[in-house]
Length: 341
Ligand SMILES: Cc1cc2nc3c(=O)[nH]c(=O)nc-3n(C[C@H](O)[C@H](O)[C@H](O)COP(=O)(O)OP(=O)(O)OC[C@H]3O[C@@H](n4cnc5c(N)ncnc54)[C@H](O)[C@@H]3O)c2cc1C
Image (tube, rainbow, N blue to C red):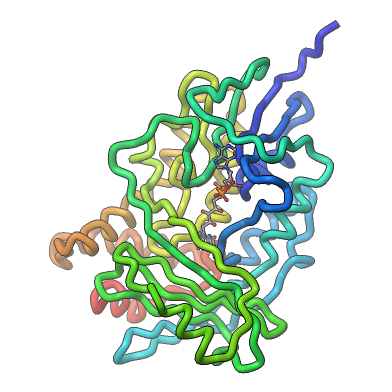
């Protein structure tokens, strides 16, 4: 007798795919396909997130987030060039994202070194196929307007690291920012994402100046196109989840929590793609506003007069969501960062 369980293929074992494998109801049988071999698989990211917010999401998957925390931030220095702004942190931490994601894959059926190509991925016998391939969006149709920010990062170790907490330096025009995220134990992620790629050479300079051992060099672009512009979210049996459909907060290039939230929306609407589509568009509506602002900035057509309603809603969103972002958004700091740069 055949099983009456739904068969689900999850393509991509980044944060979205791995989290999804731990959030499925018992009526679903899932198998994952990851293009990297188990040995070469790595979670490219700076590993920053909001502890008070992600803790519950991680708990829902049966894990204890505290076990993975590396550094608890107190303040984030924003270097504006001629002025420094200190943002009080309310839960921003770095955590060992690689180890947690790896733990989420333990005991799951994963086909390593299996690169799946669209459409539908030629995966036979599955009722539904999830495109959790992040930036690649390998199974869903490409979209016309897709803004991806090139980025590069080094994981460093040194006894001479110059900072003891989070630091960011936005590039003029807000086309991206340079970051320093402490990982504890004399380690840090130093990286940058910038549309104009102005970070070239900066990481090497840092490594040289502070006599760092480079543990790892990593880099891939990050998608900042919001879900509103990433439709379709489904195509035949394929449904997109995570960065493949644009769940990255464009102002920060932050996609861990948003990808997990997207997984939960998917799970809440299993078998109801239209319900899922509506829930995604609704949940990430603010991302489209942030994107509008970022786009105007990078294209040099930002006008405070014209954009203040958009900016106000973005500010109010961040102000109301201190726990979600793990930092306090104060009017003066916000105004300085968005208008001065
Ligand atoms: C340099 C950098 C720093 C970042 N820092 C932060 C941060 O500090 N905090 C934060 O919240 N967010 C950060 N982000 C964003 C965040 O990492 C991503 O948005 C998030 O990981 C997206 O998760 P995902 O599972 O959708 O995609 P991914 O994590 O990209 O996972 C996709 C997986 O799919 C696999 N894959 C791709 N194509 C195929 C295929 N055809 N077949 C099979 N497998 C495939 C890939 O190998 C990968 O394992 C950062 C991003 C970058 C690039």
